[in-house]
Image 1 (tube, rainbow, N blue to C red):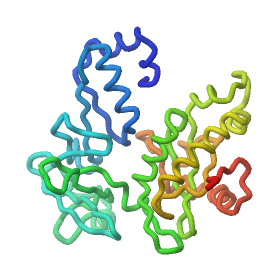
Image 2 (cartoon, helix red, strand yellow):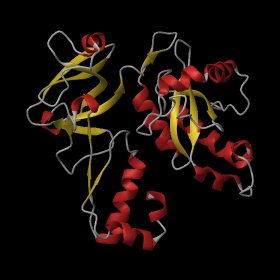
Image 3 (cartoon, one colour):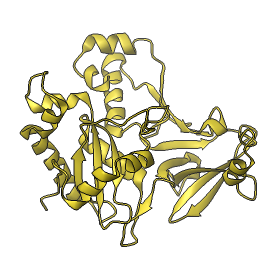
Image 4 (cartoon, rainbow, N blue to C red):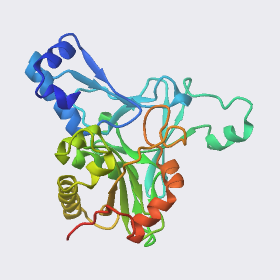
Amino acid sequence: IAQTMKTDAQLRKNLLSRVKMFFFAAAALSQPIWDSLFESAEREVGERIVMNTGLGMTEGCPFCVAVNSPDVQAGDIGVPTPGLELKLVPVDGKVEVRYRGPNITPGYWRNAEATRDAFDDEGFYCSGDAVKWIDENDLNKGLKFDGRIAEDFKLSTGTFVSVGPMRAKIIAACAPYVQDAVITGINLKEIGALLVPTPTIRTLSDLPESASLHEVLASAPVQQHFQQVLDKLAAESTGSATRVARAHLMAEPPSLDKGEVTDKGSINQRAVLQHRADVVDALHGGTLPGTLVPRH
């Protein structure tokens, strides 16, 4: 929608004429999409429409933290809801956010073991979400999302890979042709990425609509475009934990039936890696057709 509104004046008018606020949750909104929505709003109504978001979970309904300022960017999640206590706990080089308050579940129905595992010894719910300060010199600005503790992993060198920020960087670099990325490389020497394409990728291929997705992804224009993207990402990397050493465009989309897509529509990284272990092995083994590697 954000992409189409750049050129479709009627869509901009219909969608933005009465909108007072945008709200998103469940997954991060990439900065390019965020900026595009602001640009369309400025063109249509003369000002930016407020963008609101936060962080929470079913166990902390309706939310735990939310932004409280118009001066916010992608990844920012803000401050705790009134009455909720936050506990920031260092875990393997990251900081996990934990919650205690009236909106936090007392436990899981008829599952004492899961309840014990979910809370620490002070009664704080362990979210598994990692956070950072937006501005360490002004804590009133609140927090920003820093990935999932459970998704992050180490390379064989012992280097820690922050999956959340890595995914966001890849998706932004590939926009609007990729909707998500699964980061690979657990206990290996380098990072890989399985890319989930959007339907827009067909416009890159110059192939007829009847062409299969396999044909589209294998076409020279698509391969050349993503080779350039991968080269640029590699040039901007600061080490093995931020360098995508190989990438592959997935013709077979993540499966809802296999749990590769959550009920909120986001990608379950762990499930994809589990069900496609042979694809991951081939990617890192150099035997997966269509694998791209940086030229420098």
